[in-house]
Length: 381
Image (cartoon, rainbow, N blue to C red; front, top):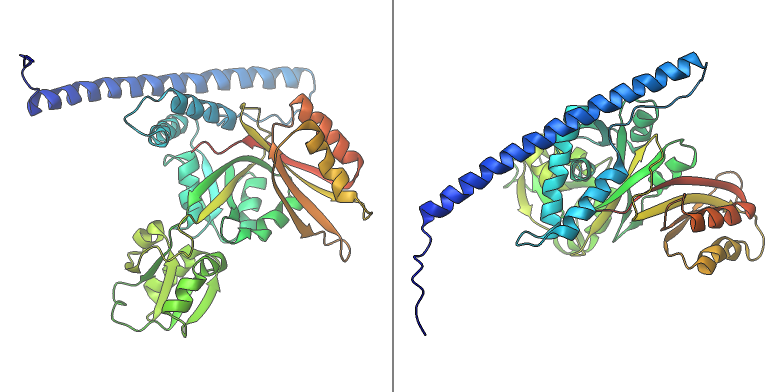
């Protein structure tokens, strides 16, 4: 068996190849950014013409100029993951393209995204994961404030937690949808890793109180019972707020994530104290506009049935008949009269799909309250 006469590639050769490739990537990134700027110019021109036409016809349309298209981004991410041949992982490639799209979109129209603050919360991490780091993330004091900032136009979109794999649904978010005009525009999942954090001077100070959002306290309950059974636990508005308190108050520890630790300069006493190793929270993106079909969509609705035997069966039967997959169903008190409930139903498909149109029409006939919360792309990364 003869040995190859091809000399081995040197480190200098490899570095030169990387430099050459980097130059090509840089050029392509700027070409893409230029295209994004041209897209913005076309949108502005077409929008101006449409406004002129409406003025000339006395139309009272409330059409808004849309730069961010959730279905378009979902399609791009799905395409790059499908086309990926490695060695980079599919999700790694998708994250890179998410940041590229975020930076290019900022050239068209910088977006402001509301989230449950303060700085360093998992909601902020979710906003940056979904929209990329080129957006302006705007902290809010409560979930209600996130809804309010989007509804009044102060922010383009909002990010709210809706469900945790350990503790279930976030009832406050579900309740906020009932009377809100906002629509669900997207979803994402975020792996939640919880750490026990203290201020820089607190490593040798006995912990007198542990603060966190009530969900984080619940998600690490068994660990706390085993390691800090006699220490007071205080539920606060967010894990970011808990981190701020730990940074300022002696004897206070926080349960929070990496972003909060970095934001407030905290020390990590113990990492990954969550009781479930796969602890994950699902977030929803809320906005003012309907989203077109992406090809991989979900639809969410809230409905209240007449209080009769078999009412729930009548609501769910159309899905079985059409062979449409339900992905979630939850109940909340209706707050209109005692012992009546509303159902939050989530399923695969887009509200404009013919089969979904028939299902929604059927459900509405058996409802006393019916509201489609939105159709939106499934989580891409």
